[in-house]
Structures are given as C-alpha cells and as structure tokens.
Length: 138
Figure 1: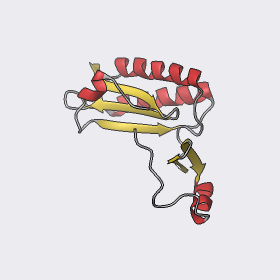
Figure 2: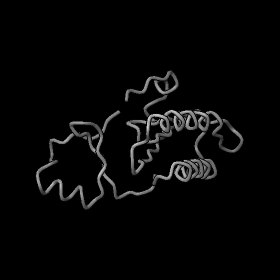
Figure 3: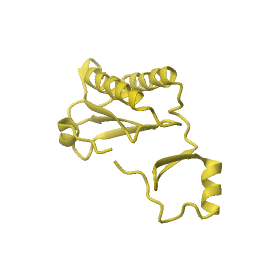
C-alpha cells in the first residue's frame, strides 16, 4: 500500500516513527475503521497540552504506523503512554496482538507473510526464504 497524504509527505526525515505489527492481517472493513481511528488519534495527539504534528496509518493491512515531527513539539512520556493506550485499545477491540516481537514479516509472492520466530527459522532452513527475500517496504 502506497501512502499518499500531504502531511506524511511534508514530514521531515527526522520524524519519530513507531510501527506496531499485528499478528494477523485485518479485513478490508477493519482496515478502513482502524485507519480512520488512527488518523483521529493523530489529529488529537498532544504533549503537555501542545498539539503534536502527527500522522498515522495502516500499511499492508497489518502495520499500524504512528509518526511525530518533533521539530516543534516532542513526544513526551505521557504522550507516548497515550499512544500505547490507543494501540492497546485497538488490540482489545480487534482481538489482535500488536506487541508480539517474535513475529517476522516479509514480502512473499502473494503478499506480506508473517511467521512466528520458529516458523521463520524453519522456512529459512528449508530454503523457502533466504537472503534474496524482500523485506516489507511501504
């Protein structure tokens, strides 16, 4: 999925980025809902009562991306806590896991694949994936 949003395109290279990987792809309906909720969150995201210049989206039906341009106002501990609370609320609503760091994603022939660490290792040993396997890019 190509991201086309004027705010996204205007963010500097120094923008702070958080990427949360879902343990499963979202349906098209879920993706539309999550994207709308994420954009609403980004528009309301504040740090010490100061509006953050933020962007949020869902990529490849499984990666929630939150971005903050910290050149005017930085994300503080409290604002980061509020983003984690937002992600946890999505996690509960959609019955997914955004915090499993032992899952690996890559671009397969028929789209993005996500495997557990053990399955990823087995696929690698079996030659199903290797050094030429594409990493997921947006």
